[in-house]
Length: 125
Image 1: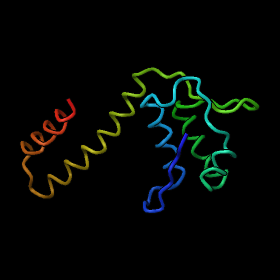
Image 2 (image 1 turned 120 degrees about the horizontal axis):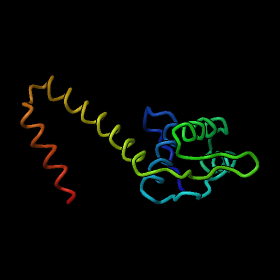
Image 3 (image 1 turned 90 degrees about the vertical axis):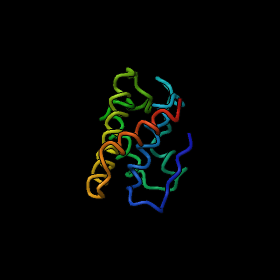
């Protein structure tokens, strides 16, 4: 499992770790039951504090992405697709809100924003 920490962002390190592990789970790179590195091992490999990794793991556990058992370690938890879809929808809503705010303040007509969204959405097909 490769985690890349960027110093060129305002995003806290623990959030970078959290979002990258979530992305690996949602993409299928990490499957249900797969172990994830111990907090110490991950902290050592990416040269950060164990406390930073602990915060990321706590967030992942709270959000239902991993399960941690004392003495056994942390594993990808069994999640249904609906949970993943809700997480992705929440992210899309955040980006769409930002696009709507920019459009509104810049005077871009709603029809143009809808046209752009439709174009981007169909581009992947």
